[in-house]
Image (cartoon, rainbow, N blue to C red):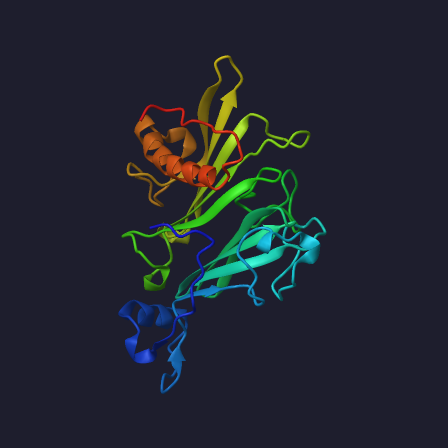
Length: 288
């Protein structure tokens, strides 16, 4: 079951004697086990909320940016000179670490930052940037996750295989992190007037620890009648993937592959639409 960014979890702890065999092996690979004794082991999954109990919406509590209480985690992560608000951090430990942070950028839209660590070496995979510009330090190798001005965003959604009901029960990081953005088409600020939605899919556990990212964009052409289509960019993991690293370039997707991916798109389109009932309804353009 996917978990939304509004879900908050308490940090978990477990005694050393209850470590799984996988975690013991992972610890050995990472450089040896620490002495247990009476010391509690670090929890495998930890959710870190804002230090000041800030609500997990954007802007938190409905207050404008200037009236928000500060959190020690706040920083200008979009690189535009304005402080952004920290809303929480999800972290899965072990030999392969995954960290996903949720932010309120400029007090107007949700965004996220993703990085992974393999045997202690960190790799930034996704950083929020202001729409239409590069973030501080140059663009992420995955680009921006929230491409629209005042975009309406939902996520992150964490997908496990097999599915789990509660993230605290995870024995490994999610196999995929999903995110969807809806373009509200702000008059005078819409830099992508034909794009209505962009879904980002990040596969995190693949051969060679290669992070795979794909994007699906729903676009329209003015009519009458108005017509809709989908654009696939990047790489994807689908049932028919046969390459060694499990990925399939967008140009190699079959019609069955696209149908498989669009089932995920439709579910999250419905989620972001429900969360923004003030926006015009956009019907699902494909036959059921």
